[in-house]
Figure 1 (tube, rainbow, N blue to C red):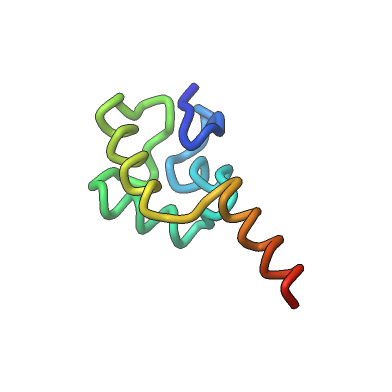
Figure 2 (cartoon, rainbow, N blue to C red):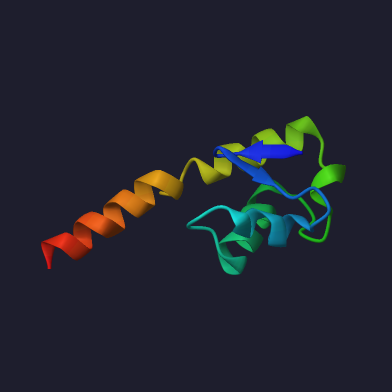
Length: 80
């Protein structure tokens, strides 16, 4: 099972769908990540190599996701 950004990605799902398990990544952003890394978005997570997963991790690091995004959203709501 692949672990990206502290989240276990379901191995039986396609890359595009599996990445949406991460808070802050939807279908559009997942597809853009796959295109930027050169990975076929229809490829299953279990079929990705360690090098592919590392490329995905590098691309995801460019975005605000998971805890940081939740914290930012909460602070924005409190500020209103």
